Image 1 (cartoon, rainbow over the protein chains, first blue to last red):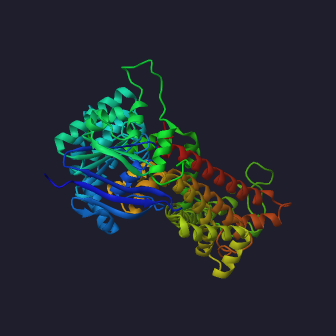
Image 2: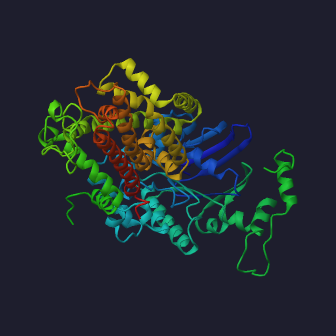
Image 3: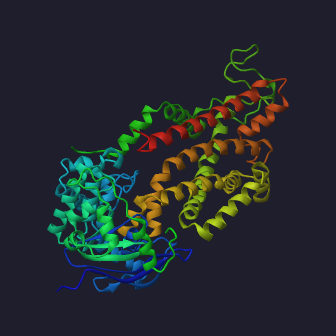
Length: 288
Length: 290
């Protein structure tokens, strides 16, 4: 088997108040594979995503573990070379297309940042690349889009632009940070399909951060479930969704509203499950 | 479609022309600029030429007016209009130079403080607070007294005093922008902190910065007038609006126009800079422009 593109091992991090944010998080993503990173708000999904992208906030301190990308531990690389390594080979598809584009810069400038910075492309070449990418994400009028400001485009269009930009440098790994939560459901579906298609066309691995198990079922090969900064369960999507081993996973799946049982109502995760979890984590039942 | 002028330039210009504030304020400033640059050719008389026989003649249309002296003369018989035109040179020079310098200094420190926070911010912010504790006019008089009179000293004094205005606003703006998702996205691309500041954040604070610069030009015109009023600006053989006000004050009862002319010029100039600043803020912002 190929070595994994990304391998987190026992990554631990604390906040500036020495509160644990991540505890021994391990995770592997093979080439071309999509790994779902699932959890409630505050479970540490975004912190893992930021650790992979080398943009942890100053308030978060890594206390142990490794973030190995193509065999090199990102945590051991100096800031300058790290920016280049990550900038070239790891890309981000951000969460909210409304805010992830700079309101004061035209799409062309924003899409060509990476290629101009790391490939040294001139304006014409970078524009040609941007046009090709926009075509790939099925944007009909790429010339007009390139000279637009973000506020002149719809949410779906902006997310397409961001996806196109993410693939600009043919990255090995893409971190998709809840890329569909800010979109309405019909657009969501198109965007998911688009990411899937782009990914298989380019052979890119994806870490897909989400709290939507429906999205996981559609797009992920493997899933890692986080709770309070710890991996609760990990495995292939079918295994985790069909035969969940951990009570929390079962409760979480049970809490999803489903079409096949419309009258079941909403089922919250039982408090006993949460209490057991905290007991397992060696904490009192205090709220996280 | 062949683009001779890039779209963003034509769009920005169109937005500016549509805004009556920009047109009025910018128009007046442009007019003033033409007068200042063309002063040697455009002013009807030599601003320094004295004619004691024609002292304190009233402006055109008043009893006792002399032909050729549209705005009358002062107590030394010098043409008020010509002195006004020549005075705009000093006013505009100081306005542009001082505002630009203050903006450069203040914006640079504001960006750094807002981005790095922590001890960088602590030092810069405390500096701003200490600075603002000094009464600005007194401080400027003190600074010019130390530097020695002259346009250069006036410019330096205004820049040294007023950078705090820019610093405070730009710092707050930068803090807000630094939290936004597009900054995260830019960092993920691999921009260094400086690149993020200059490429991503600066364009977003630019409309505010330009508005502030325009307002600051108005302030600089006033400060320059104050300094030349107390005789600390340029040497007395160079006509300035402040100098004219000082002189007009002494002969207010014989010739009110000597005081009124530079006051009105000052008022209109400051008004124009403020209008321009406010208008530009809207017209330059691609989001507000909608």
